[in-house]
Length: 308
Image 1 (cartoon, helix red, strand yellow):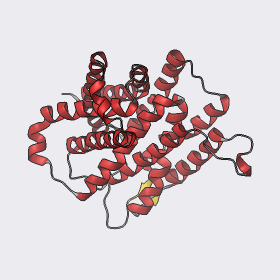
Image 2 (tube, helix red, strand yellow):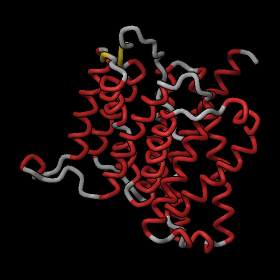
Image 3 (cartoon, rainbow, N blue to C red):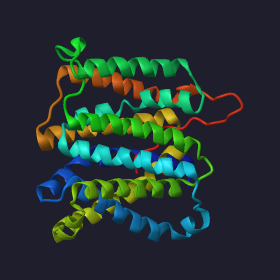
Image 4 (cartoon, rainbow, N blue to C red):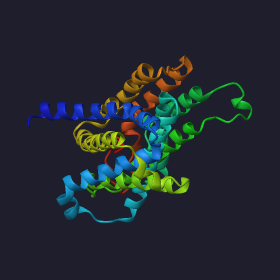
């Protein structure tokens, strides 16, 4: 395959993934209206993804899978990241969720310093400054500076914690360079399914999985297959394209989400939210080169791993 075709396929893969995650809120809200809660839908979807993934990559998993302690941390981090994001967009305003989630470069910069002992570049410090300024503008309201709660809705805290978990997962993933991407992806799928199962156990709704309507299972199967495909094509894309270009393409998720939320749910963002969001998006554009490697350490710069 020629380099031009490879680049075209990589670009198409990342854009497709951005579109899928930008629209992910819609089928989960539709399923919720059919009586299938988000934890139920999440568990079912990722169990289907696991089954399909194991069937497709069984030989690879049998040859290359090995359990390492950092994989357990990756499982929990990306598991909570995907679960909290799905729950947040199903319950809250789509763009507020996405913009709070996209504060993840801020947390990545801080965690890279704490866990990998990397030093921030000038771009890294700019990412921190833009993220903090954008976040302040985005969440500001009268009374905030006199002791008001910065986030007033549960879905906002879910989105924020999901972005933190996403950052932690990416930092841990960089420590696991020797583990194949397919194994990391499978770890994420198991993590999301585990978090979904725990949520259902805590709420006493696990038995309701047997009551999911047949027509809902068809949509869940489609979602599971789509998530498997996007896991593969997005990882192919970020392995070929430069980090800055991959991040620029990933940010199209914000555009797709804004348009879909307006057209399908009548959700529009305010000027204040748009200004804060623009600063947060600008910080993400600069996040491909945030840190210098730690002394006697060689962690190549990669764009953030897409949720699986």
